[in-house]
Image (cartoon, rainbow, N blue to C red; front, side, top):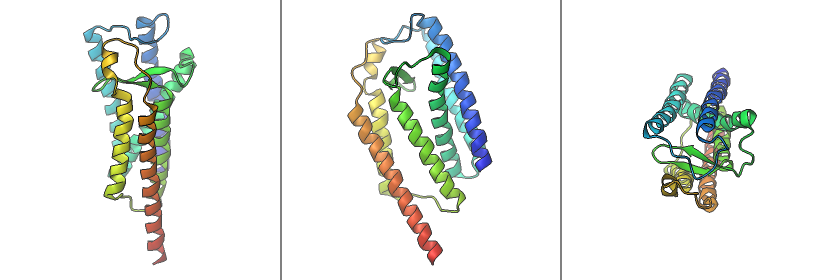
Length: 218
């Protein structure tokens, strides 16, 4: 699995290069004076192509993750890992290409499916960092032979946290569609969501390791 993880990371970094290159072209076309809000109008046909490009990106990440994983857990964790690396290096390549974003608090359009996601760059980078760290930790446990599985309360915490994070990105999508400057980011909602997700991971891993230790002792 270690070699597969290395190649998965290389793939994600390369995909991030391609993705950021496309965005450089789009911004040169629609934002010649620099990217900012409110968003520039985009023809419906071009918007459809852009949404399709994002969907294709997810399909590619899902496909390579399915090839990298030997079971459902490895597939899921490989996707989380590749997604997190891809997202972080997307911004890294953008900064190398055009020195953007000038700050981690600079706002960006994060995603368009099913509605526009927006927020400061720091927010998705934090989420992606947590995805990378959590997936590597669980993959290491899996490689050691620990049987992965979480209780319903842990899953509830994780899913609730994820939904709150998602909500913080899309709650003001209507203002984006109206080509308005978005209101201040909902850091409180985001922080609660991240906190719940991280707490679920910590609680779940502690129970996994305790159970593994008990089984080995027996």
